Image 1 (cartoon, rainbow, N blue to C red):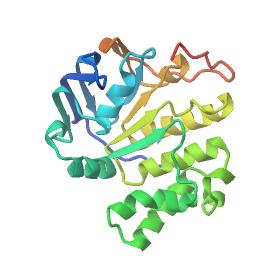
Image 2 (image 1 turned 90 degrees about the horizontal axis):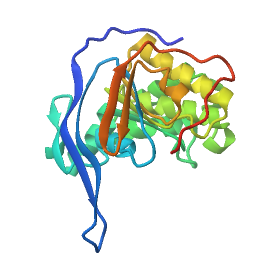
Image 3 (image 1 turned 180 degrees about the horizontal axis):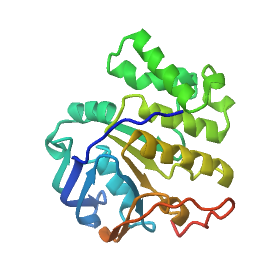
Length: 254
């Protein structure tokens, strides 16, 4: 069972008037993906970022995850102005402060589950013994002890996603960023994964930002941000609820 740790409510990340403009190569056409987004995220939050296709939610997630830079505005992560950092420093931040969970799992097929978990620690030059101990601990925590030495293709989709969540936790990140984490899973398996996210937030206090277009997934979060045309349509806090079995709502246009 995952165990609780204390956390305060100090700001972890702040976005101030963030704009992102893409220019189509060879043309003067500009796409305004984000149009002045200002948000603050605090330790222990459980946030859903929602919106239809083209709303800017994926662009926002990429910026928060230091996978892209804003065209203008300021993004502070753990007190650092991300927009001013060089590529090497951004890479280091991604490896030490952020944990990513993707719809397609993004596990390395040639490596075992244990080895997949150890990869981020390898790049941080963590000693071999410490890497293995940390990886084994997390494999046990997500219920994959019997699959630790299997490769991803030998696991079910739900097991692969549990492995991906364990990998996201390996560096004890400030933020866990989940992009449609149940999108490739059946309803029952998706519920298991969402239960794990719920536990990570409620019992360990992990800060989770989740992109989703499914209303019932968003309903499990404590805060729901809805984007439309690169702007914040709404930003509301709520009492999270767990839908009854089989009640998973159909996805909105995505």
